[in-house]
Amino acid sequence: MNVDQHLKVAQWHIEQARLHATTQHACGCPVNEHYQKIIDDVEAGKIEEELACSTAQ
Image (tube, rainbow, N blue to C red; front, top):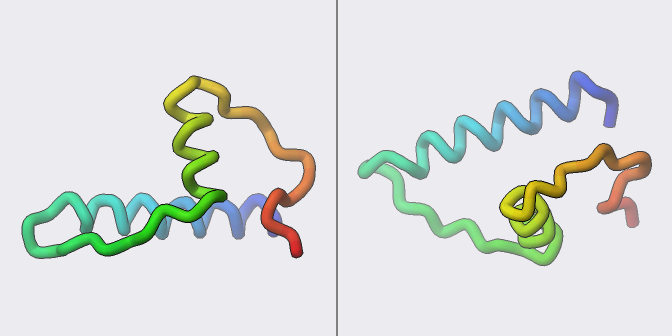
């Protein structure tokens, strides 16, 4: 993905988080291994630039 595409995906995630914070929206999103790693890195203050896509198959 290019920078613009990453920003659009990030914007979508932010809007989803806002919706999840409301009382009208019940969250049922599972945490997969990739997202758990991201959560752990953010909580540890280890946000670094990825030079290659970590989800490429």
